[in-house]
Figure 1 (cartoon, rainbow, N blue to C red):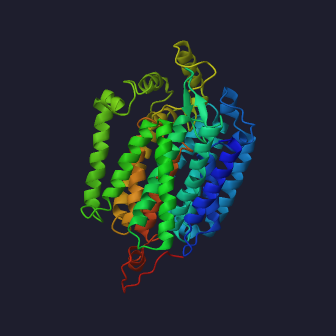
Figure 2: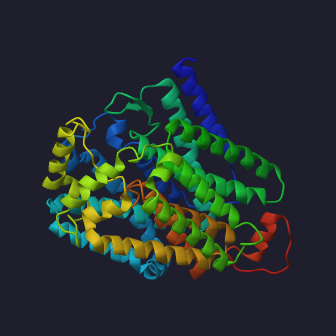
Figure 3: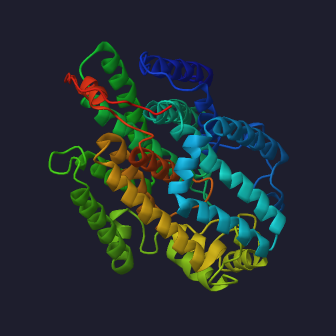
Amino acid sequence: MKPILATLICFCGIAGLFYLDRERSVRSSKALWLPVIYLWLVCSRSVSEWLGVSSGESVNAQIEGSPIDAVFFSLLLAFAIAILYRRRRKVRILLAANWPILLYFTYCLISASWSYYPDISAKRWIRSTSDLVMMLVVVTDPDPTAAIKRLLSRAGFVLLPLSLLFIKYTDLGRGYTPDGLTVNTGITTNKNVFGVVLLVISIGTFWQLLRLWRTKKSRERKNRLIAQTTLLLFCLVLLRMADSATSLACFALGGGLMFATTLRTFRRRPARVGLLCAAVLIAAGFAFAFSVNTVASALGRNSNLSGRTDIWAALIPTVPNALFGAGFEGYWISPNAKLLWNALSRAGWWHPEILVTEAHNGYIELYLNLGWVGIGIVVLILVSGLARGLAALKRNQSLAGLALAYITVSFIYSATEAGFRSPNPIWIFLLLSILTSTGITSGLITESVVQEGKRLGVPHPQTVQTNLA
């Protein structure tokens, strides 16, 4: 098939998915397009890369960044802040309840002062706040549940078909390792980024299918089932093409946990779900701590996890300050990173022009930039988020199940990738999940008995007020 014909079919298919997934009775704010556009860019390529004016992966590009990207993301951030100002009552409630997140961003800003390039770290901090601001736009929407569904669908319907098009019919969807091997990158420019994009969308799509399956039969339900099933098939096919073992394993864990919350044994029983989450995390922790070879074999990787263990061993001794790190996003622009690149190049790991710019481990990445203090704060965010997700189960089992899946997966995914680094999709959806759980427990997000009855096709005389104004 000619590329031009494949492109036409792809865009018609995207339009068809949007048409099938319509919910005529549901209205979400037009402001939702701000986080959707932000997610499209985070999960694909920057504006400068789409325009073909990116500076690439040189050292200067790492330090200077792109003025085009800076202007575009600044505009998105400004518009989103303007929206949140109008919703400031909800924003205050969400932020006050999530003080660990505020503590993290405050500490990151303070840490920029001891970065090797304080001005660069400060600019990156401003950019990183977009993750939190955009997810606040989603959660403070007049109908947060509909906003989350549409965020996931709008992201998936565009990113996944285009990724398949890029891989099959262009050179844009493929890259090469330093050894000359071909890897599929889809709409992104990096195999690992491609894998995590597929992971977050596949979990969200599976959640939508579980929710639709328990909805009363209708023509709209049938159309949406077709759209979401098609999207999940895209996810599974592309996960195989991406050869992302970590993402595939995390999807199985997250999807299994989400499915368990729908079973009668676990439904609206936080204690049992909490034990299940703890069992999954403890098992994963022991596996990585004591059976790395077994884990690597199960994931189809060699004993050093495709070189990750060697990178970790080389990185840890180079941190400038074990307690406070190199400053927010400061390690990879510091002389320490340059020494690491030279050492790896001499050892034959990478060519000198190819830079290693992440630790492939979220906890080590935190250690390099923010030290033990940063690790402690993020662990506090994770634990408090998990507690809020469990507490939210009794009020909104479906949405809380999704939040718990993302939070639990973020623990595990970050063992082999830099999951807590902005703007990683895992970090973004972790923030979304914690804010969503807080919205449920605080009463900002409610699913009334009448709403749930209509969704399941079971009428109920009781009326309960739904979303707060």
